[in-house]
Image 1 (cartoon, rainbow, N blue to C red):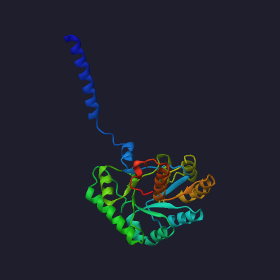
Image 2: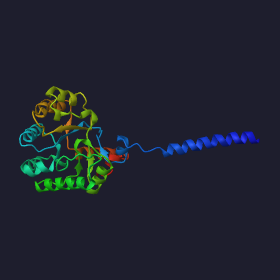
Image 3: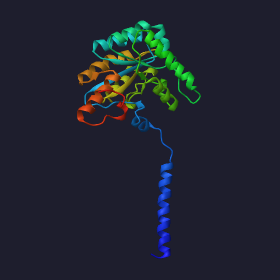
Length: 262
């Protein structure tokens, strides 16, 4: 091999090595895929069975929550309530009712604290702790799930949840009903029914300021989905079903289920 050829090969090799190095040096994109693969956040849990998890944020509310509980009982449905500690303090009887009727109660902070850049980690953890204490004092079991208000999350939130032993649960992007904005009964119904898939986690609110359309929408959504063969389970039940499916198939469960026992 002559010198010129050696130089060409050497230069070509250097270009490849530099390209590889720069590829490895690219910053990690902390997007949904990143957090799902690490098992740090759950958005939805696709299952073989027709199961859906209905979730309700920001309650309990003395008017809306009992109406929702009555509907869930009527259709033999279970829900997951992401509770604010300040309302658990004020309406402990509703927390007890949710617990007694077989629903899941989860942490949503004490005062609906958003995790923004300026949010102090100690303050956020304090808010989580106070909410947990309020839920337990109201007569419920210690929560295992946490939903950050507004869906705002960052590494601070994830580390705080890990310290508490919580699983962070958000919601299926195609099942954000935006019922908090009172968009109309028809809009909520269409959003849920037109997008229903196995393993969905649907976002509702059992405390809406002003006129709520959630209860009226549920009166249509629950029987319609039942007619389609769906069953309504808690988020933890959904996770457990997925883990059992994986064990039965002899495959490794998704990383989002790594802390769930089959």
